[in-house]
Length: 157
Image (cartoon, rainbow, N blue to C red; front, side, top):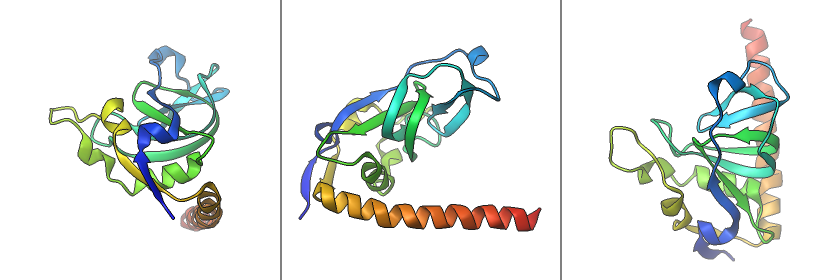
C-alpha cells in the first residue's frame, strides 16, 4: 500500500549543490563534478558522499533525474534529493523520473526549478521493503541495458 506525502517530507536533504570555478573542473580527477545534465568533468574535492537522486535544476534539460552513489561534487545546477531512513534514494530517483518535473519550471527565457516547488510535490511511496524490491528488479534491468549499449558500441566501432 502506498502512502502519499510531499517530496520534502520524504527527504533528509533536498537542496542545490554549490558553485565550482570552471578552472577547478578537469577532464581527469578523483571525483565527478555533477551538474543538472550529469557529469561535467572531474575535480579533486567533493561536497557529497552517499546515495541520491540528482535533479537538473536549470536550462532546457531541467527536470532530468539521475541516481548517484558515492562521492561527487554537486554543482548549483543540480538538486540533491537524499531519501530519509524510511525511504530509498534509488527508488526515489526512479519515481522522480516518471514525474515530468521539467513541467514545473518557471515561465522564463531560462527554464528552472526551485527547491521549494519540488519540495511540495506529492509522491506516493510503497513500504521500504517494496521500494527495495522494485530497485532490485529495475536495477537488474538497468545493468542489462547498460551492458547491451556497451556491446552495441563495440560492434559499431
